Image (cartoon, rainbow, N blue to C red):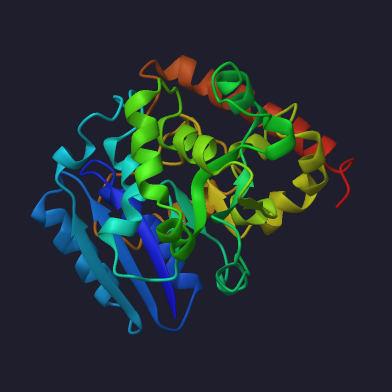
Amino acid sequence: MMDIVFATNNEFCPYAAIAITSLLEHNKGEIWIHLFTIDVDESNLQRISQLVSSYIDAKLLIYPVNASLLDGFPNPGVYSWAAYLRLLSVSLLPPLDKVLYLDADLIVMGSLQELWNMDISGYSCAAVYDTILSYSITKDYIGYDYYAEGYANSGVLLINLAYWRAHHIQQQLMDFLKTHLVKLPDQDAINAVLHGTIKFIHPQWNCHTGYFAFPPLVRSDQKKYIKTLWRNARIVHFTGPAKPWYRECVNPYKKDFRKCAQLVPWNGICDLKLQSNRRKSLLIIALRHCKNVVAMFFSIFYGD
């Protein structure tokens, strides 16, 4: 049995449904999906419920969150208020020992049993390093040595809830956000509070777009994984503005995302454009494809 947490607002419901579908398509056995929601229409919740009910061993529990619980938190800016909901896992969930949190802008490409069974005793959570861009953004205020202790991407977190309860982590996260200026809201809080207690794991469990950039936007010690990630990522996280539902996205796993999109009860959710001017859009796509070819070529020089 696995306990998986997702969080979404109303706008992101179709993409949360795609992420959930990818999980259930690639994982069998009893799976409990805990869906944290904020300002979500009942019609969207019904669609997701019907979707999950079509999988025999999957169960869905929905946790509507009142926005007042986030009073005093900094405005997330380009991010959603739903990004904060993972920080409330202790108070929202039953007294579980651990959960696997997954963002709504990702797809699962294989079994997660190995990740779920990972030993995180003594750790607050397990996570993958974020891009080096996060270091540039946060270095002036994060308050610790990024390269020595790492900075995690919060899109995939195997959370040790027993540790969080014992060390009052939720309250520490909330206190931090109410007393600090942040640029990467929930992620800054997680790293500032939990640094030194995070177990950093193979990026196959959170293959973000930094691994496909050229030059790669990852730490030097992470470049050795790049070659295998082009085809063998277990969780693909579509970070950055060019999500796979946009025409301008050229992520190598975009086709896999769109296959899952065909299985959810929404239409027209993958026909969006970042650039309204068709000529500019095509130019962006062509340039990104060229960069992909270059990035893939140079990936052969990074050994695992």
